[in-house]
Length: 380
Image (cartoon, rainbow, N blue to C red; front, side, top):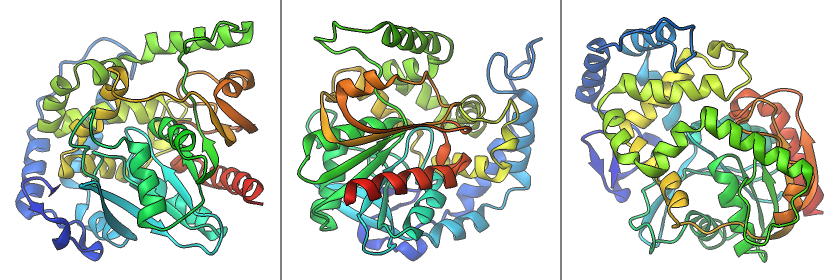
């Protein structure tokens, strides 16, 4: 069932032309909650030093409650090329951009992103002659969560069935960042007959059994990753250990939800300490609104819990040609080539001059060009 805050519809009743139609009562409820926000007591610290900045939060909450036009955003979202498929009883939402007869590509998003962040990038890649499919991850916005942690098909299998069996693409490429980087690698590992290439924005940073010949450069990388986790990884630890405790608060408080994701747009982007230099207030509030009206912040945590508790497979070896495009303000540390070559058939390794974790929004032109060049190479 598609849950739009106290309003459920079956897949048969959904229309791509009118996917979103939030009841006015739900919109009024959101605004009332925002206007009645109970603010946390401030600390005598500099802005952002210990979490979401109070002044930025107050500005965004006020805008969300009284200046933001959700109905206009709703109409824009409804005009996108939405599609749905049912795979093993799981409703899968995706966008499809037909750009020509070039290689079909699947573009996967990460967290706390949504399909909406991929739209500009997908259009630019489609303009270069590719058919582009943008699926929402299971449990994100309009895709249903997998009903079982250990018996439902994993995300990479859902993606393969979507591309191969639902859409009929015998051969295709896959791009992933953040959570989708792992799913992209698993997809290529499981279906080498179909995946012609993998384009990644980051990779797994864990040692596997048998990884005994670690180089000095790789040890420095692992140490830098561990340091990042110590300083910045509390969100991940919470989401993979006690996500439902957190989810209750964020599902009940729109200001809490906004604070949880806003901090990431500030900390993980190339914004120079000023989040509005990269993301408009409208964009940030729309992302929060999508999570709020679909009530999916809880299910968006599932990927972290499953990976951290042994429900997900690991990438062992990907034989398909693989590219890494690294944006310098992304989370963690730049992996050395040798680290990628342990798991992937690395054929392209590019470090960008700017940009961060949200590259499809921050630098869509740079990313579209890299994706295009790589998949033109592997498709020849």
